Length: 184
Image (cartoon, rainbow, N blue to C red; front, side, top):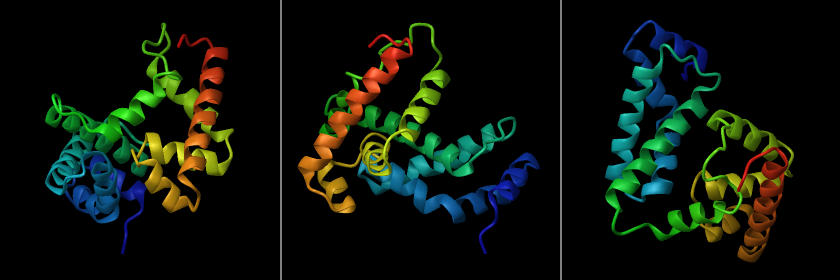
């Protein structure tokens, strides 16, 4: 039986090591999928997932996440991206590099005094205003690092449709952030 997130978080606050076991039981496959989409290597993904549990243990407390799943996703994604950079500093992963370079035209290189949390909040607000289909395609590409072909297959659309949706969503994001004071 899967334990509720609030109870798992309480186990972390109680410093009960069962928190890690319950986290792994409930979200291990999810964290592995996030990491695999970035690293494409089971051993490296497994290492990042294990590091995620350690980082979670060291972060809770004092942090009390609103969503344990999203908290874990952020940690495993950042660890996986860092691992990818370390492993491929000379030899870059083309899909990941291309997907990140696509965002360069609509995200600020520096925040011009705005905090990352403000940018994150604005990005969330922006995505909430998009159609469900556009939001899913955007997140699959830029959060989970899926290729356009993978997204097209999963969403039942052509690869060209995926590219058009991504382009239009990036353009709307660029305008949205510019209107809110970000210099791109």
